[in-house]
Image (cartoon, rainbow, N blue to C red):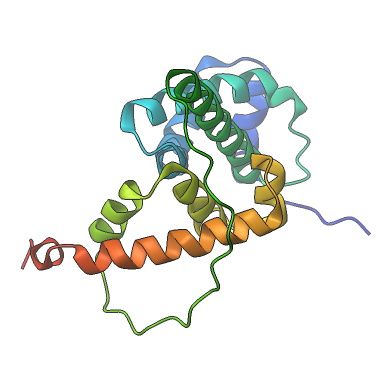
Length: 192
């Protein structure tokens, strides 16, 4: 028994398969903002996220023929966006490694602490703290919590071990706590 998935934008997708420019524009308008959010959470720089998004749309329009309607279009396209973002991060890291000789970071595992009762933080505060995380922490944190990847999937995508993914997530959570506690009180009450 096969599960039938309904696609709310099936007519647009079919028109895109026929290279219909108006349909491509409509699909772009529907998906640009949510997919930009995915890019930005991973890449963490607006201009770079915009570039990654544009490349993802180009790749999607070139590969739209391969969309087989077995999953939702949004999930299929999101995978292209996430992969493009991760490839961008890898390329950026390779470039940085050529410029600098970085010290290897020890892979000691950090035991997951009991979650203390934290105050409620605004979206702006969380976004601000997320932007301050080191790249490795931010990528794992974003993939795990926002994109709902498992540690196995993160390990496969980033070419690391599952234990490294778990360790990076624990470190990211700890660093996020520190950053949020250090955030100025005024940030959460700017509009009050």
